[in-house]
Image 1 (cartoon, rainbow, N blue to C red):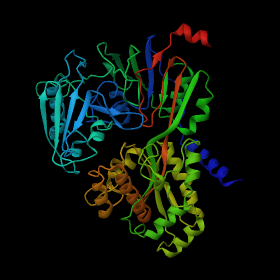
Image 2: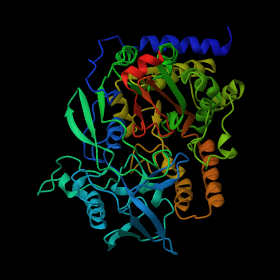
Image 3: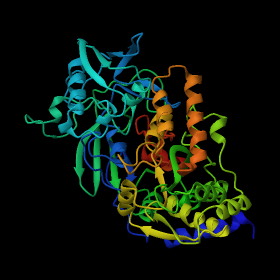
Image 4: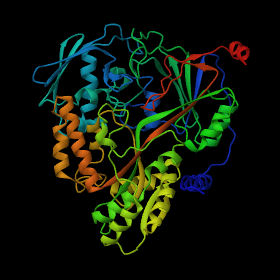
Length: 532
């Protein structure tokens, strides 16, 4: 048996142990021109950027919009803004707004509403999750917002920061421009009155979220490009159907009860590909899989032990087995899809068991169990953990698997309460944001994985360096330092797997893992039958 076949067999057994039973799928709703989408959990709310998770963001993306968004190459692109200019000193950004945008209530977009939306988000009472990006606590300080004229608004920074436009476009923070009718007279949230191609029609908690087409929506004239370009609402409605059980999702696809399922697991890829009338879309995303190492743990404070762990792990096997061959190893925090991923980021710790054993002998490790935390909610994390446990055993490290509920593991991550842990980060569109997620003071924030003042100083320079090549060199420098310190191991970028039925056309995936249901067409039933 080859080493690869051995690890594939171990992963297959792990997936079976963590599998779900098949349950009845949801009843197919009526609606000829309706796209039916399976999502794994209910949304957390409708207040953009406040109470959020991945599925919430996915739904909100179709209802609300910001000044900017991302092209396929992950560069910021105008959305509600028609253009943006930057002052010579890099401190003033002036956005010229489109003159053809109306909110869901029929009110036109204007600069005063943009200013109101942003000031509401920046108000501490709103609890916007990304307020710290603009209040100076993370470097960038947004001093003021000016209404220049009815269609022009200016943002004034205390100091230049080249990441500002990327932050405005960010899809996790979702700096959405909403109408004041979204809140009541006391400022309490009511419902989103946005500008997106769809608006909220009904939310039946635990069952579905129904969006209806915004009939007055005017798409951009440019072709669809990532999340930018024309957002044409071809379908009358989008019904997001809440199906937590992966087996039920597959059953719903097979029985034509849903038209689209996304964020599917690699372990299910072969079965999904066997379903007739289904198109499978795969690729790499910006999200990345990691092995976290708690450097403040007494045992793991020894860098020789951390390096032994790094050389014991065959990341090529992990990527091949866990992603079903979709992803390739990436030892860097910088995603492959980003233009800043240069050859320096392909440098990593070679799989070298002999060197790993030598480093282990030099370390203070005496054979005590290392607890490897993981969960079964995300099969990639669980499969990574099972394979890593076996690889560590081969060089003499006793790793004990601790399988936790996801919420428990997440709390442990936030508190820094672990020794080693398989984990994953959602993708960032600029390397500065990726490093900000892991680099910082552990005393100030236990969720930080790498406490390096020197690296943090270099990271701060990436926010002011305007020359792209010079900025890329700074990211290379940070990567080399991370390889030396080994506070964590970057394994591979996560895979994208989506399945669409033959009832819809023009669905395409993106490295952002965001479903784009604008531009997607529902094929009339008689045409589907005729094509079979």
